[in-house]
Length: 227
Image (cartoon, rainbow, N blue to C red; front, side, top):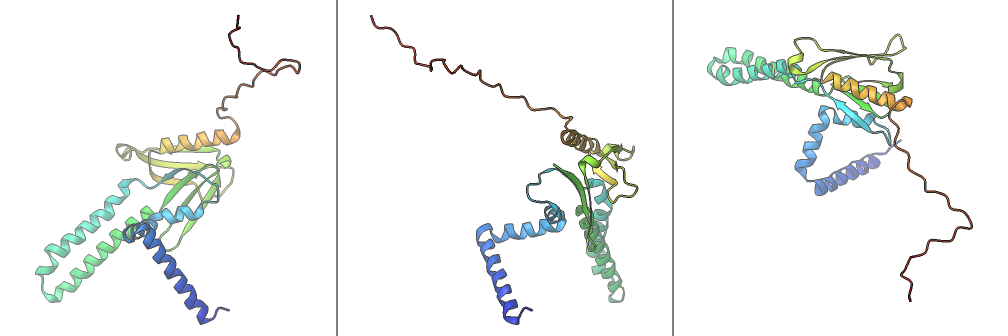
């Protein structure tokens, strides 16, 4: 069991290491990295194992951000153009409405940004969730069928859906919806599956030098014969 002294020593050690990172990277860059980690980068990095290489990391299409952005804009407009000009008896309702719209816009945008689909050199996996976190993964060689759906209302945005099928009856990784360039993503997965199954292009073989006979004289530098 850890004593209070051990807890204090651990907090001091973490604070000292944080100061070292601030001195090396700078406070602004450290804060920016921390903010970026809220949007799913840390979730993707924690899922990787040593030596695993990321081939593609896909976020949702920008079309899903339209509704949260509109909610935030409406909330700001109410806060600027309506709340300051109403009576105190009604102002509380306007403040609650503004907070609700801004909270919905930020929370929904954060939830969409944290939903990521990753293709590595050995598997595909998806991480998503804001308060409750979810993970699903599948080996690339287990993928049997890939269906690309591009509805007419998503084609102007170059977006669509991806359906992954395997031999299992139930799986946690199946529908990948509202992703940009789904046909390119399906091509990347298919290419990696062919490489892992041995059907991909083979690297050119290096030409071996001709073997020499044991009694063959060594190579000597040719010089002009003196007269």
